[in-house]
Amino acid sequence: MSDLGADIRRETLISNADPMDFLSLLKPRVMSLVVFTALVGMVLAPGAIHPVIGLIAVFAIAVGAGASGALNMWYDADIDAVMGRTAKRPIPSGRVQPGEALNFGMILSVLSVMVLGLATNWVAGGLLAFTIFFYVVIYTMGLKRRTAQNIVIGGAAGALPPVVGWAAVTGGVALEPMILFSIIFLWTPPHFWALAIVRKDDYARAGVPMLPNVASDRSTRLQILLYSLLLIPFGITPFFMGFGGWLYGATALIGGLTMVWWSVGILRADGEDRLRKACWSLFGGSIIYLFAVFAALLIEWAGGLAWALLRGGLA
Amino acid sequence: MSAPQETEGLRLTDEEKARRARRNKAIAFGVAGLCLLFYVITVFKMGPAILSRPM
Image: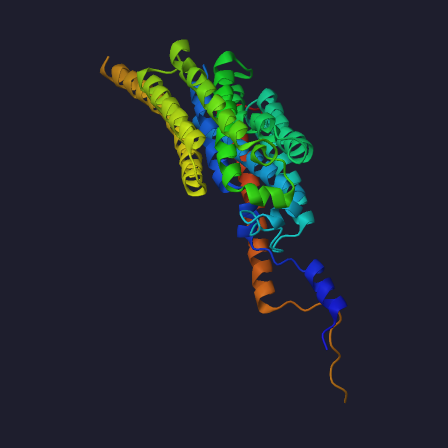
């Protein structure tokens, strides 16, 4: 006869987690975007940072983002369990205990802030701490289950990495990183609402008031278009401010227009299948858009650096 | 002579033991990595000044 008490005790006392489960608590795919945008914020900043210290700073920002992901998964384990997209995450699937994820997230949060503060400066360290706080406390605990504007306001957390990267070099904040912040901030709603339309039933089951669940279909589609339209002027601002060149300007303009095109596709889609297809186009395409505009800035910076080295070498 | 008594407490399966070993290794690498990280930060923050100190 099986002893139920012993089985339960076994479940709670023995960790079945693999190191890879802890790694997936860090949301590696989100981390890659954070690393990329933070790096761009860092290279665009005036002033110099030792490449090794710069690398450590990017690493610390990535770990901080990962830590906030782990804390998010700890708090949201109950809703993750009822959503198809997230049910296989380490906590709902039982491979990692909630307490383990909480400790892991807290320790990494403290360490990442400490490393960034010590390696660069405490403005950057403080901004990273604020980013983690904003994502975990303001977004995850405060907004996500309460308002349809959850990802609009919460998007600020995802938009902060270039500001943190800039601060790591300069020790302060300026208009340029705030423009980069606003690009990611305005990019977030169309990106997540496209997903939320497709996963509407999932969110309804979990009781998360995403916009498609609480507003009319038309209103959601119009708001997606509105944010995509706003993205065009903000997207090309770096070109007019002079820290984005022609390559960037062209990428941001074509990318912005394509985002609007995809959003119009969602607005005009009739029938379930066409709508799903249009939403996936915007969801996937928006990731490419963000990578493209930041990559353009990075390429221009690298080109400028190579040109300066070449001229220096020839002179 | 009576059979040796079962050790009290929970016994890990081979899979659980393997996972625990992998977790332990990950923690070891994590701690070692952190030491290395602080060492590298110290060296690169101080730069050449690291050598100019009274002996």
